Image (cartoon, rainbow, N blue to C red; front, side, top):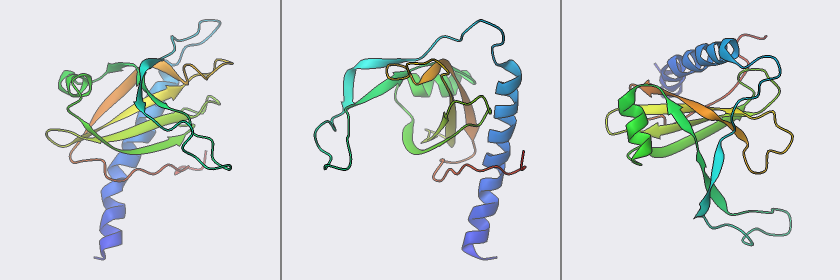
Length: 154
């Protein structure tokens, strides 16, 4: 079997996990006039980028998203203690609510993990682009590659 085919097959469980996670998130989403709490951005700059772009790219300083993680306690603890190494990001409207969501992939102490940050539907996303609750899921290995697509044509 070719190397690229092996990588594609290795990504299949992650794609199935993301699809099932978003289906669960859609079922658990807040309805009616209630609005979910929004995640906050930290006050401390974690990546200095302001003024470093060229005339066609406008960069701002990066700030950590402060979220309430839910999932296996050992994975939540690894994120809280900065023991997970960030590797990959992918963005799409996974739960089909009209807001872009974010999946982040990490290498953990053992295996890997992904987090799903649901996008905020609030009018002003500048200070909080995501809802405060983020789901955490274990992976058998580091999340070296992530991709997004409409795999079931819905």
